[in-house]
Image (cartoon, rainbow, N blue to C red; front, side, top):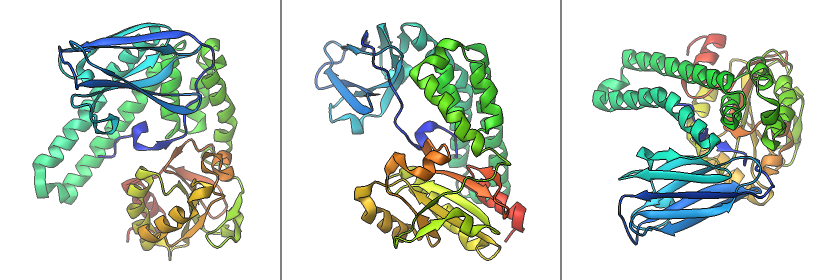
Length: 375
């Protein structure tokens, strides 16, 4: 199922804050002892931080400096202490001044979390989204139960309609939460999640509805600074010009493709969701490349990973123009288009205007079929 979640994308690291304040995260997981461990994972000062505690009578406690604004974090549980990567059970929370307590008899995911304001609001937010999560889980169960019947056109069509309804519900829940909680840091988090799929016309009023305190936080200011870039790539705007080197080192400009429909595809060799989406993009290119349509790939690979970039192009069969300045998240083109997560794409018409964005899976094929007719 193509559920929209931030975890489905490779994300630019979130900004965190510098003022030192103490948090305490504590709780218990039944009455377990060694080797069972709980891990705390978050980002601080642009770096990933992981801490761990071996359970004693099920209890764990973490302490540290949170900063002046909440930091998104996650607790992970591994009964065998075999590492964070093999842990599956988890619970999200926010590091903020004060005591945060999670209590459960089995899974962290089922635990009851109590804490200061932001954590209370985070629990409310996830409770509101539960109906959508349950809806996608039901679709997954329906598909598994259907077996080969899930491949039938009628089944696929019904699934698409249900997915669209769930996505619309997800959008409405996020919007309403932001409106109802203008002084919540979680509203800013919801807005940033929604920003991936939304257009500037929807985002700007929601941002303006936030309180001055939220907008003046470091993350709030960063989102405010991003808005002009999102306005520049809003639907109907002329796609900003850029020029980058191709795989042979030749500089190619976007304007050199004027007169064609162009899909600007932001991706990277290291991005798992991008690589998973590439077969769908390859299929679309093969069907419509002779219909005045082409693709321009823009990679966010690092300067030390040119070989990985070239190998991924070859392995995934990406036969269209590929560009990159090999500057990772400092990619000039990505910055110009306000790209904060990948995969992300923009479809422009022969005059250079943006007519669609973030077309993934069947949405890409459906849009191209609408323009060129079904093939």
